[in-house]
Structure formats: structure tokens, C-alpha cells
Image (cartoon, rainbow, N blue to C red; front, side):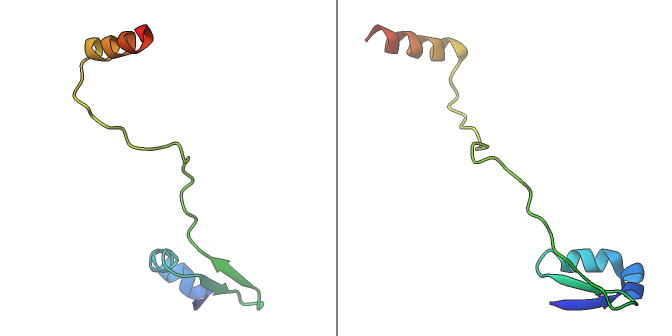
Length: 71
């Protein structure tokens, strides 16, 4: 964990945000208050999965569905 002063934050914001990607960063204000900064992971759905390209045409897929319904 690294602590920066508010003056350092004004000068080095980009570097501080990059550091917050891997660790918690603390910012200490002149009046003594401290703030913690950390990166928030992007919210993703557990159902958000990559597709699989089976190289099938629409006609082939429809044929498989019809075949399955006949059984």
C-alpha cells in the first residue's frame, strides 16, 4: 500500500490510478483525512460466455432441430 499527499495526486494522477490497478492506494489530505482508492473490477454476467463457431448454416441448424423434434 502506498500513501500519497493531495499535492502529489494533483501532479501524478495517472501514475496513481495505474498503481491502484494492483494495490490499494491511500491519499492523505492536508487536514489529516485519508482516502483509499482501488480499482473496481468490471461487472460481468456469469451468463456472458463466448460463442462457439460450429460453421453450420441456418438450414443445417433448422434440420437438426426438426430431427430432434421427430424423435
